[in-house]
Image: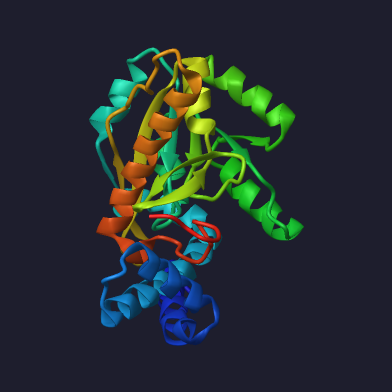
Length: 271
């Protein structure tokens, strides 16, 4: 099948079957936790939307080469002037995003704009799947470094040089910092703020929205200097509060395109 036909077929199947799966109860719980007054009708609309988006993502990995070939028609890039601000700032950029739409399209869009990228990754559990994903990414001239001590060392070198990196920061990290996420305290990775402070890098919010079957809008927001008062712990806290605030706004605008499937707030969340 073509990328569009297979995408629509998978999405239709998952929208039909997904809401009855046990995993959907987690989605419903998370939505109602964030928005206690939301109607049940709206909850079910979001649940179906989550499955629609979730089903399309692996299919788009499989067709990534085709999407790259057709990217002028499939990927709209908004905010290119902000990429130019980053390019001419003389600083490296920590591009942060979330599991929305298909976040892999950010890499494709930034490559199109000739932004040199180094990405730290954790291998997929399935070695065959992992090999395929990494081959697809390397085909786009992205430097991949393995998560761990060596990867962290290389990333610091990169951020002290002329390359940039991308980070997905909408995940729970027990050894991170506790800051609000969609109105509830959530353990959040501190790496974007800590690395930005250490390397004097800029933080660049970039979001992906799905606008159709294998069609996307990638929006680059204005580069932002992390808070730097000399109190490292407080600076990280305030900077990550701002980062989570940007992601929270994106989710509020397009809730059906975020992955609500994981336990983002852990047990006993606090509003």
